[in-house]
Image 1 (cartoon, helix red, strand yellow):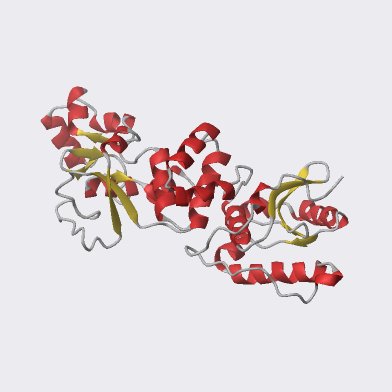
Image 2 (tube, rainbow, N blue to C red; image 1 turned 45 degrees about the vertical axis):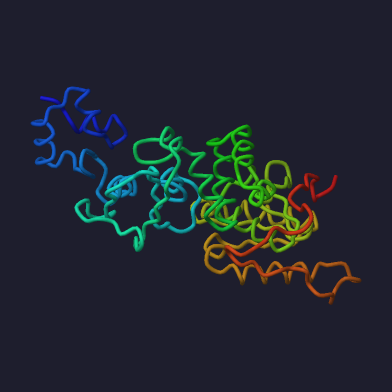
Length: 323
């Protein structure tokens, strides 16, 4: 008797009938596995050991695979909000189904929580049974999502080594000319989502921002804004046991003549206007005397509608702390 569940699991949790038959499965084995609940039928001819609500199962149920932000979220990328389901389907795909019911057809004119992307044949050659390849998913995000979201997933891909420098340049070269500016906003040294979002929002607002600036012997500052404000972003999982170290670090930063602000990740995610106001206030307080009272050049960041700032503030490499 063939262990269908073990075979499906070995194939990543999702398998087509032809794959199972090639490994010795009979119709009797498939029927038994379905009745026992060892596997479920995601779609006609597709068997899975993954939960029915898993995004990959839902994409296969539709008739394709995860792409864009959905694929990247499943890979563990830095994504702020759970996206609606983005599904890649072949250009000639037919009989698309509801993500929740394989027996109900999908109305592509009113998909209700599903965005269908009709892809070129070469996309089908990459990735897994439930998701397109990393490069294809990243390309889709840069085309479809707002700037800060796209930068965050690119930061993640480079920082974690999912994407190397060569593939990054290939990705940029494959973008339309009006999207290639995103290259200058990406920073592989960034090590968290709130840092990425803060950096991008500030740069799009016209500020100079440098990431991971050394301070003291072993520490580095998350972000330094306009050579004046040092931003340390606290996440509960990383900072709850660092109270004394963080206080000592703040003193070191102050000795280096920078103004310390320590917003939480939750503030960055949900109270950005307040964080931005605090940064502007600190910049104003510490601005040279002859510039105080002048109109601020900072522009309000608006997700999805921000434009690339003039100049190249992201190319700064010198330490803001001096010698």
